[in-house]
Length: 107
Image (cartoon, rainbow, N blue to C red; front, side, top):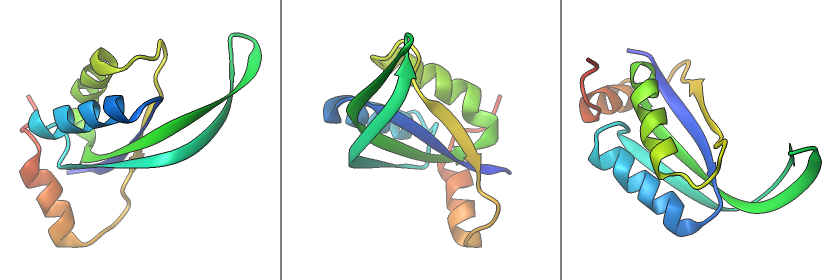
């Protein structure tokens, strides 16, 4: 099993919590952290913009990324949401086993 952290940015707390709850309830993520207080600077539609955002970090398996991405896109208010996976190279074996046990089987 390849465990991953999924990094997602959202504009509002209610949206972040809705995404977090859905991912865990649907067993697409074992756990999710919601981190408030992020200030983002990015280029969009030809202009440099700034926004207050929250970060959502989901712990899951790489083989669930397609389903997880589809679920997040369905709940997200952005036209082009940031949803990226970062492989977990190593970690506490019991924690990695927990991620696997708490997520749905692929297929």
